[in-house]
Image (cartoon, rainbow, N blue to C red; front, side, top):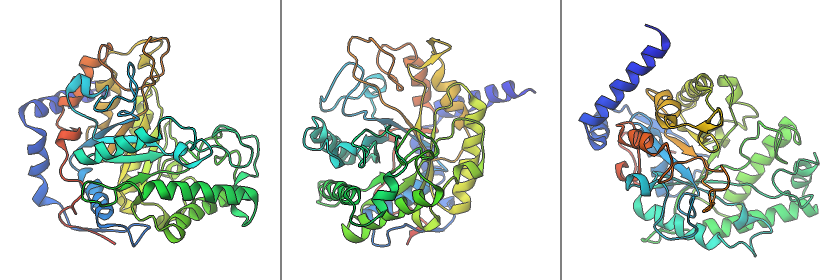
Length: 396
């Protein structure tokens, strides 16, 4: 039996299971068989809800993957800042299990003029009320040059941040102060702080950013990572963050590539991976295998924190089977907690192709429904209570 036939058989078997048994049954069947495990967070003073979410991220990996979408509650292909809307919801009448959002504009010099910061807070509260998981990336402006995240013109940015008293150091700490203020304002209906999976300095393996491989040395990146986490925890008292690292892995790779500039086990909570593999399914599969192996080795939950093809195209043509072939099939049997698609830019005239998730009317929408019906894909309605401690899991 060749590889293609094996994958097709595995996919058919998965769909059959998904059609014959509800997602809730799949989750509950394994509940009593989970082995006891003790996990450890960077922040030993993390809130009870943050520790509970962390335990559930670990436990859910053996049940399936949570489907996520960046900025999915703030805007979509044809709408902007309309409460309750989601491109995903308008296809399957269910929300993504993971809501990804960008914290940069609540931090840097755009804070005073941003038109979407209120929407960011509103949608985080809405997602938490449903019981969904929230993760935050940060396309932070360059604090030295005044440019954007993609301004990699200077290799002095991290150096200046790490040198106490410089203008860049002062500015960066003010930006962290702004982040702390925002994070500590995020409270659920019981007045408890909302846990956030926060991934600063994402895709540090690439050269495009001021914190990336072009502009920082190995030691500078690690020191910048540690400085940021310690400042938020020790100086600002932020105890509702789970800290995620997220190297970009687009090509065939393994464990060592995921550990590029690893800050140390004590300074990473969640092992993420941004994987823009396009249609290179082999690359996605190899990195998924490495991710789950590393997760078990380090006893840290893991997930695909960004993925997708711009415009959902294959060779320039609409990719109508994208969801089953490039997302669902490679994830069968892989123990990762989430897969998060990048955003659908607001483009009501449909003049461009900057969308990575499904939307009503797109040619891949029917294929997306197959992914949704699968027993291993978890959406908002499928989630257990993510904010109570999972059975047989302790978090230190």
